[in-house]
Image (cartoon, rainbow, N blue to C red; front, side):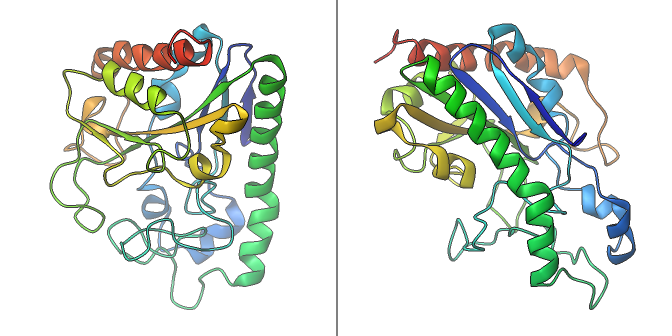
Length: 265
């Protein structure tokens, strides 16, 4: 499966990257309004932004498949993660802005959703679960760090401008409070929210099991911190901006490691 990337490390931390992918299988092209629209809401370059994590010994799990095909960070039952709020589902039919992704009558039916789940969702989570189990056998506690980004302003999803760093711990249920505090402290000097609009997606909520040594936390970055949101779309990799943000992200992952290794209780 060339769309699924697993780079195993030995440190007690996993960085999952579920939304950086832009690949859309060719057999789906005919049903979509456009490939450009299908790829519009990707977490562009988040995988490149966190490449340094391998130097810290982190395990990195990434899918190259576009979230339009299937969103591996959604409840497979189809239940909304944010009831009463605008969001996107397991196989989204609209973009973040509410624009239809599919031509009329060509939206995925239940059988197609099940096919995509078997092809892409299940293998991703089998791989992620295997890495959690592997590291949990080696360490008394581990951190699952779910890495995301989004445009700073998406009026359909939230009001105003998003803080630079948005930390989600499912309202304190997916990890120990000291992990959340350590991550927030590493972001000091920047606008930060904890369990604000983003409380953690299905990955954080499903795998977070602090009583059994698995502490899951989500980081949603405002894209303005590492790329030009105002230029042509899709954006281009902005090495200079990324290098300004990466030291902070390194501090964030270092805080996660300190927690996992017991330096933070």
